[in-house]
Image (tube, rainbow, N blue to C red; front, side):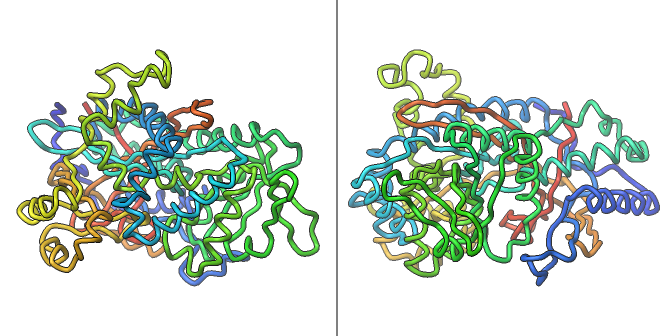
Length: 502
């Protein structure tokens, strides 16, 4: 499918017109809050900002595959909501005798803390998930859509992705991209309303908590450069829903977070200020071991988990987003367990076989490195040039690729194999190029690129049921083809948007 020739992108443009587009793109970004803090800038009181890394042209993407990704999101919302509510499944995958938590200390620490909290009794049954499912186009016998991963914590760049799509729309309106391509017209630019969509999920959790004058807590990293991506959510919550936000790091919460003894109410008690009750905890930190340098930081996380506030995500929902769960879902019968059990979920909660087939078609082949003794490792060794080896980590920079795999397997102790999975590499269309504009510097490079589509969704769920879930927007991250990693915040990618092609 798709007769589009990716090797002919971007369209030819004169140097003068390219400079005009770059000026308008950078000016739009600065004028509309498509921003980062500069390296070394004080985050406490920002005094300057730079535009985020952006693409000059939107990326061509088959319309049918984009619609397929949107169509899959409600299934993924439901799937991961149900995984997070299945204690027995997560205990087996994460914490049992052969579970990931036995060899991966970060995962194990979170799982053990959650286990202890369960034993003492959970006080808040509701979970909130703000999700992002990431995909690449795969050039096999056909051009198909393949999932890279599913994110359940700190699914970032929702608001800035909307800004980029609006920027490319503005370039089309103001310049028509100098008539360089018939594809670059308004009807081919999909609308993106991620900001209001994600905020709708946060507002739903706040409403479910149902306490006047309570606020939403954003748990953030110290020195966060991607602060504007978070602030646009805060502004939308206040201006459209009259909900206030407080921002705190784990270090600040260690001193200021208090739980009442009679009702597990979470309050933030800052010096010289009235105590603030928290309805919802939204984590933009806590997804990496670097966020927990001491045992006290884990204890702060567990204190928040014990509270009556609704967590986004809860610890089990964060664990559900691990790569091991992604791999276990490919095993026979697991998907049916979560999506087809009418006795557990009712007839309305069971999905047809066709939906499950489409979900499975979005997966590449995966297996556990501890599969059948040495079988998983030997299979990975033989197929190394077509594989990526993934750990239970978020945030970029953690995967092992191709030629590096055999040496890595030689160094991996057998007892640690359960913490890693092998996944077939996705092969994006070759020859696609774009102009990448680096953050703040104005430096622009034309490079062969790979573009990753992310679809956002949210789900509010608990007590075995889903209260509500929705697909709410999208992003595109584009990187030079020579880079294995894809993080914008880590400097590997630029923010991009889509032009739909047939």
